[in-house]
Length: 402
Image 1 (cartoon, rainbow, N blue to C red):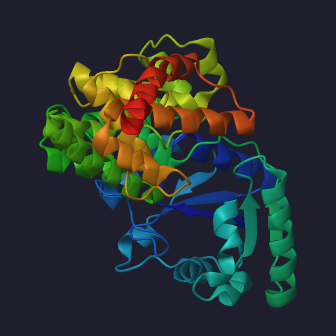
Image 2: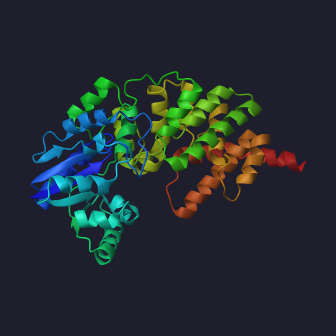
Image 3: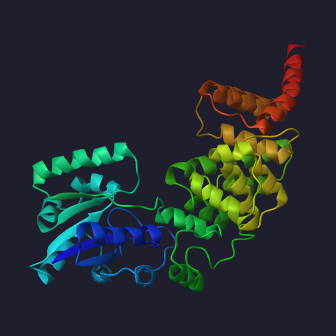
């Protein structure tokens, strides 16, 4: 008997997991596929606000109910402490001594396999089956090199599964749920989530106190971007005080300005469709520009922020002619917050304290020059803004020479 062991946090289980299960059963000719939700995974912490292990088990039951030969296994949920794969496989081998166990993993986990607890013992208990999570040839070539290394060093049996895949992560699904635009979930799974208010779907996110707004905002960002978001927030607040704008409004705009930045192009367009956003040809052809637009809509529709905040976020990447004071503040703060380091940033910081319009022109000029060097498309709004603010820069220079 061939038994596949498919573990993970499944937080939540999505259509990518379900497709992978069906593909594994087919490709590996499995008699059984055990779905093993982890209660306390050792390699990462569960996202803040995650539902209980029992809730994730219920979500898995709903997600995989239509997959023949797939079975839920609550072994790790019943075990106290960290959920180590070697202990799970040992228990399954003891319960199924004649079975051939096949441990399923994605490319990222496979490439870190040698750092796991007792990898040699794991390799002796089960074959290792690695799935494709994306179509990048360089990643798959890296998998092949690692597979050869494990075969030599541990006598591991490694199976590379050629499978169809849905390119989405549970992290992305959680973000889309919070943004009111769920995607890639079985209907039964979505119904359970909404009925129980999991993943920020049950709480009203409108009119939150700033501390709670910051907490939620940062939780929806990639970890590496959180310092930038905090830096932009505090720089916006400082500039607001300096230039006579409302500090609290500037803080809220700053903490939300990149709220959708972690989403990929496909998910950005999904949000645009969900909220019926009209896009220009330039925006459709350059999805990297979309996070400002989708972020602005999410700030208003999900977090209930003012039109002033919404507009500041909308224009914070391209700028526009005749910006409001808050729009200029957020545009500049995003460029010059303390974590930024590039040639010309000190000039920008100096101008921001003396002449806000000249600082905006400086930022636009640097940005457009950079895009031209890279051969990238320049948004027409940026060009209009550059032409509009050039006169303020020229006036500032003339005054300084008098």
